Amino acid sequence: MKPQIFALIASIVLTACNNSGINSHNSATTQISPLRYDFAEQGESIVESCKVIELSNDYLLSFIKKVLVLDNGNFIIMDKDNVYEFSAQGNAVRQYSRKGRGLAEYVVLTDIALDVQGQLLYILDGMNRVLRFSITTGGFVDEITLKGSHKRVDGLAVAGDEIYIFAANSSFTKSIDSKECLFSFGIDGIMRGSYIACEDFTIPMAAFNMSHNGSYLVKPLCDNVIRRVGTDGITEAYQIDCNGKYAAPSAIYSNGILDIESYFAAATYKAAMHIQETDTQLAFILGGPNNEVFSVICDKNGRSGMRMQARDKITTPTVMVAADADSFYFVMDKYTDEGLDLQADPLMRYVVEQYGLLKEDDNPRLINVEFKNI
Image 1 (cartoon, rainbow, N blue to C red):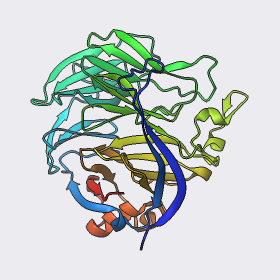
Image 2: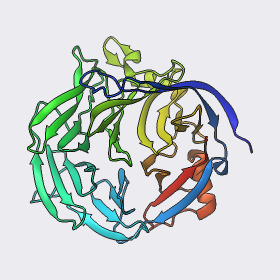
Image 3: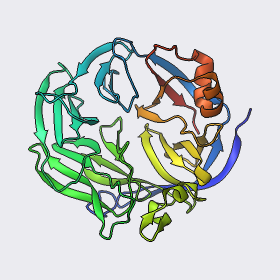
Image 4: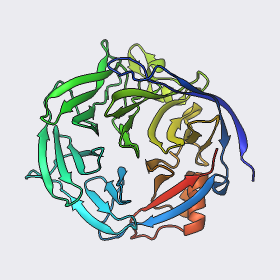
């Protein structure tokens, strides 16, 4: 079946400029507009190649929250309480640290990150600590205690000798004064700077997503800008416009209180998150009008893209959790036949048709997918 054309015309702007501590390294602006989305109805219409990585049951995985891809093809996987390494074939390699209060242990597992060389794994403890481990040996290297004016820690990125922390504003009350949501620290744990003033509510999840080039993409909820954190500092990478219909939370405040139900039900596009990129494509989750949720794949250098959604239109569709230069990765968890019919998008249904449902005691699968040119 040929995908139907979806009439949304959007704009994504690739830019770099000075704004609230954002560095400017290139005055040129490349605009991708308009961006026409195809509405994907069948998985085979969008997939170039697909590979399943069966994760060994040597480690029992719960909800997978983050995946990092190493240069050798191995995966660092963070679930609710643990951090594991699996080989490119899905075999268990090692566990990094564990929950506890001893040396090299974390109290509240919050996020993970790699240095740009891929030699050190950083584990963010919600108690304002960062633990570092050797990727080569798995051994504990040291602990960094963060000292600064930040109120909480929700996300972690590493660039050169700087550690970046995302601190969400979880209050539904509009702030009188803007509060920064991004902070940088030295390896000594001393705060070096604060960035991205944000007076609106921001979601404390999926703050940073590591790109295959060693930089990190960060998307606060408070505006439409996707920023890049790297050795060049913080730069603006993309702007999501949706033909002027993309709304920040500030659009739905009533007497200073965010009406979250009205925000997600509004006839606008909002809440872009889970940003991943290959050399040529960008993937993210996007809230739509009337509480609908979409998974978007778009060409970074062209004028086309596509969106997918579950049949019930409100279940979050496939979330890309990692990417390399050519392809994306997502997690396949357990579905019932009924759940697959109502809550799975075309891509997930395609994978189930090809490889079947998971068995009751199986770990989630990691799916590697390369999309056709859009």
